[in-house]
Length: 172
View 1 (cartoon, helix red, strand yellow):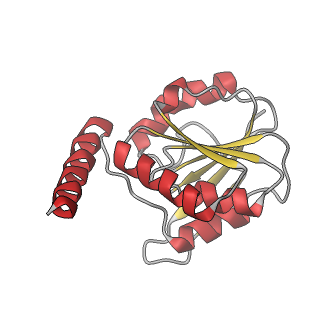
View 2 (spheres, helix red, strand yellow):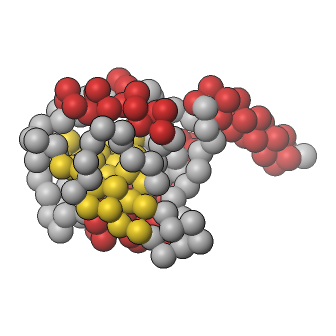
View 3 (cartoon, rainbow, N blue to C red):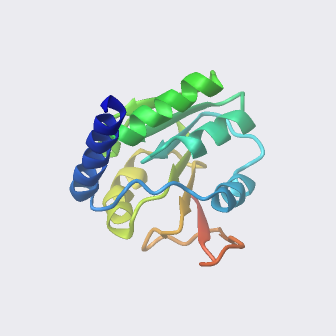
């Protein structure tokens, strides 16, 4: 009975936060994750941020692939955030951390890489923050949704049903 109540409460929280955020916590598929990982630089100096880290699978994959770098995932929906913390405790990846909070309050000045899987409106809201805070040479990698007004230096098409695109941008 307790498990059913926990599940029901979790589902309710997901629905409420989906309404607040304007979109539900949609994880990257394994094919999207694999394609995105291939788009990342082989090495980079600085911190990688995943804004809207959801269930944590991408941040954990990046941290495993780049053990020399720090990876920080930001999520404001409580259920995916707690799930990502649970995954982190099981996988024990020392160079990743998950922070509960608003992505617009994240300090990104040390970012070498920013990853997003946000809907178009959220990407447009985030654009001025990225332009203001990211240093020259930082990369922005967006799953599915482009940043209007920016020209990607690379677009990777995922071999999936929807031909999902991964957009890679370099900051000047």
